[in-house]
Picture: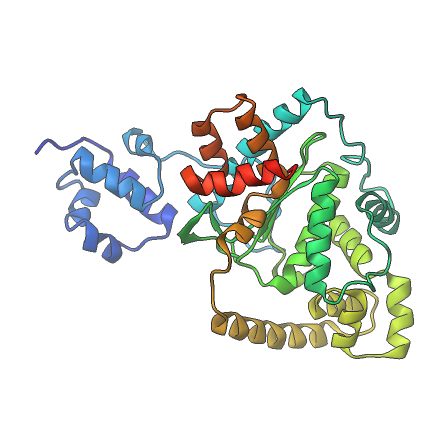
Length: 378
């Protein structure tokens, strides 16, 4: 069989990039070790299968040396002096996919006569976080008290819907597209944000605990208000030394748990769970806020954090995975975006082929979800 000539260094690079061990590859490609040493070479068919396994573009293997891959947006994932790993194929593909969605949606709504969103980039790092959080609440039509909602999970859904209704695309997904074999690593990133005056987009890593997603969501909204893109990964809700991240953390904290209200509530109860129910946020957000205002120590917070997250992981492991596929589409695609795609397809402004690529859905699945959403008014 005819083999292809490639630089063995690229095989080692692709393996490291995908985080795959040689022994795992040998089960599918018995001669991989030989290929990596340059003792032999794969056929084109074998190289194509290897590229799919390692989630690498086939063309990369024909380069003279490994490419230097960088995130197309600022990287805020560093924690103090800890080094930041190179972005994984899963993170890169997810960011690029969301950028394609945003670009298409932006052009589409401009053609429909949309006006720029005045709140995007309307704040700066010089502003008071409390003032910015107040303006965010006004735009998103969120009252200072969510007393009409039963749980913080209901508050998250309400906030997500309000954001979409006010022009912010929100995607919440824990896998690459709809590929359940490619789970997004929460240790790598918790979310990212792509500000735009017409089509701002936030992405939440759904692999993260639900308890932490509310803070991530509002933190990303703060990024939109100052017009700053970025990939985020604040571990254990630790404060950041980066000024942009520190500001967005402060805005998110004040948005979710206003200081003056927390001080009043603390005089009534010092139960983390009662306070969490009062503010309709997770207990983690409440305890982190209590650290900010010096009501509890950092040591007390981390003790609670680790015990709470251990329980969350246990509950998640015992809970049946899956859920309704089309309900999941609301989060993985978004009803606003799906509605726009459906209208464009019906009007002949978008080919089905391109619609499938943008949504990740095909055939009857696409028709059942996207066209149904657009029929409801998207």
